[in-house]
Image 1 (cartoon, rainbow, N blue to C red):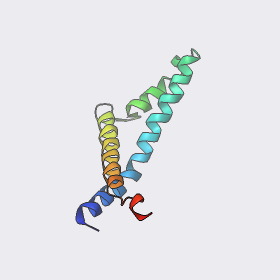
Image 2: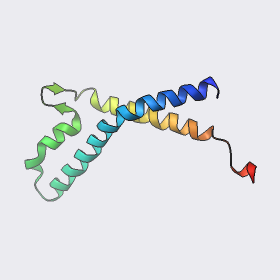
Image 3: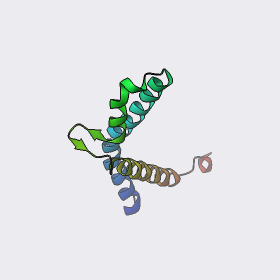
Image 4: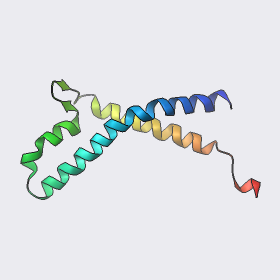
Length: 94
């Protein structure tokens, strides 16, 4: 395995577990708040928006949380796509 392939895999493997929780939190809180807002109960669930934006009690990450989420997701998308294109073609073996 070449060093570029190995580095892509290492980067992907290191970032994937770290990004699972923030991305799941963002998706879940966004969907739940939208459901509450659709049922005219958005005012009762504003705390979901705080979590969605990165405000975790005393830790206010609202200024960097979206950028970290986006950068992590783009990195996973890029490394995953590059690894996928480097896979050997199965058509040549038939």
